[in-house]
Image 1 (spheres, helix red, strand yellow):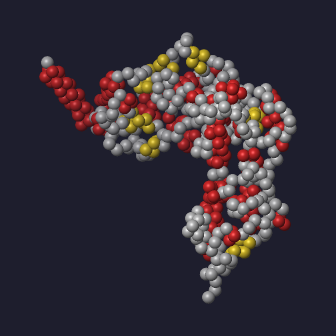
Image 2 (cartoon, rainbow, N blue to C red):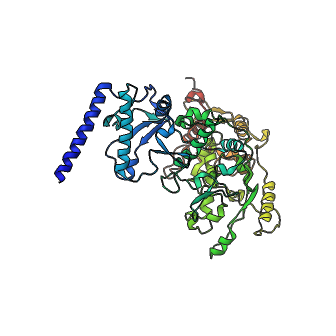
Image 3 (cartoon, rainbow, N blue to C red):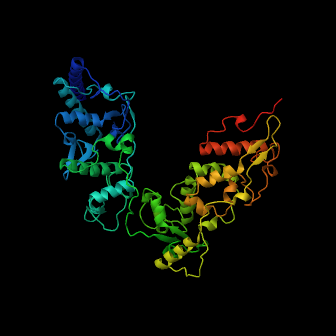
Length: 526
């Protein structure tokens, strides 16, 4: 019995192989469209079978836009390859779910090979019909695909086009009734429910966005209305993304969000966390200003639009992945925390010249915590009343005056002569005042720097990093000896200190000069 089955399978294999060899020998094979470019944004890797087991062959490199163009010439649309569900085109090829490995594999082989074979018989340009021309060991193209974001500008354009009918995109799922519904006032980003991972319910972000966006764009274009892209490259090509119209300034997105809040531990959580106490002053937070400086609410509200302290309590709870309030605000290795985000801002060119070099060697200022955890300027009661909290936060923020400059010109030396290294070279005339003024000018419009540089002499600490803020800080040689101190390996000698500080600053700020020794040091005449 088993022998008979093997003979039948062998006969089928030989029959299919004969047909493929006939087609190939008669008409040849190759890409659907000849393309001299080896970088494309429409490459889809067909590797769905890895959900069931390890792949037996290389994934298939599928050029989606090339197929779309080929089908358009035959007056065929998306439904030639995709099924529709509730009048919406579904992104999977000829199916709704990946239920069985053999079924999915046979579906691709049957539909793709038969389509290519029919086109070859009709002497039309077509794709391959043999295994190795699809399952290639080496890819023909490299992907230039960029993820498509939905920033505030694009959101405003869509909102305006839909006449502020948020229900066109935003929905929630009713588990009991097993259907979607619109929850007014609870609109959040799609990514709160639709995650990156491929899941059946809710479907992945990739599937959700392609179903919603492409179907909407397609219907608009069919009705001769303004519509967005319907091709892969239209959204995911870097050059195409640069051409997307930007609205500036973007009107504020209204969702009954506060202008100013007082960040503190949730009162209910405090009562539940036995033994935990809030030992720091509350933090006034200008919510509206932070909205303007970010393209999306997910920068801070990464899991939902709830207040931070509902998920991040003093002790940490499951809903907040056990991350307590302190770590949520202070963790440095993430862009989701306050200090982490501020640290990233310090990497910008105008700030990095000082901050990149200060690092762990920088002595922490005694009042650094107080820049956020401000002492209330009045006896206003710290009650649980939200309105009282807003008033207290507003009062505290108003009292904080930004520092946008430094000492008066007369207090800043015009130049400093560096002569401790003048053996082979002449002493260096360091244009001290010019450099100080350049730094001040670079950050004069930086509000973050203005609020966190709490003293007129704060910028001096970029070079005078471990000395107290003063109009006359000690000279570099007071800390850095003439030679390297082996007992203090983290403190370079005077020559290393100068070169590390000056050259490091120029490198971080993208300053090309000086390019060599004699740009700073004039050689001594023999």
